[in-house]
Length: 276
Image 1 (tube, rainbow, N blue to C red):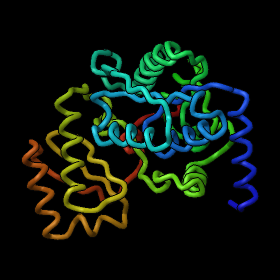
Image 2 (image 1 turned 120 degrees about the vertical axis):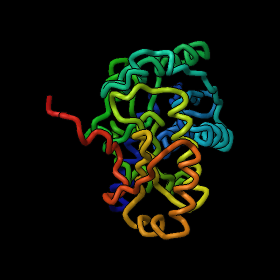
Image 3 (image 1 turned 135 degrees about the horizontal axis):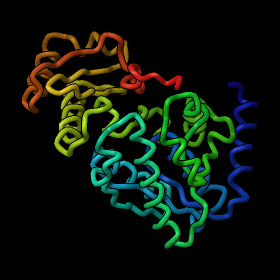
């Protein structure tokens, strides 16, 4: 991406946001939503922007804390909304369309809070790359009228990172985030115990190795660890490997495996027939 085309897309994003006047932003503290929130604050002013985050069994505590810290750092008015995802049968059953039902309920909950604060326009941080993946939550957002300015401006994930770096945002090189349910194979019911186990497992691996991207896929009693290909050798070293196995077995896993294909976003989608 040339500096000229980068400026063009940045200008396009600002032109899309400016007529909104006031907007509430679904804010996870990830790369996309942080850039969107920062540009909204720049264009609309902090008095016309509300960041909306959630607390949920599906979100690691570290990510929730990061969202609170980032919103304060950016100077945004910020509300954290409790979301009881495990009270929704369509979410707990963990079918391939789980994300659709979850996002529809989540956005509806955020809307209620946003409207209580006087906001009628709602934004999310989906980017242009998201349109080419299996993301049922995108459909839910579209049905509810949630705008996605990054996607509308044609901004890709790499461009999100480039823009974020240009703006000095600390999230520019943050690994991609995904809810904890994405670690549980479809058809395996979601439970608080399983989600907490996954969160603890990933924290244990990170405590032993400085990793960017990481997923522990929960095929209980098997843990399948995914890291980028360049980190596989580090994780498989004798001392590190033994520590990781011991830590994950202490969480209840019987077998601890390292996926030699490396990290793939949405790897649990690989067994789905997405043509229908």
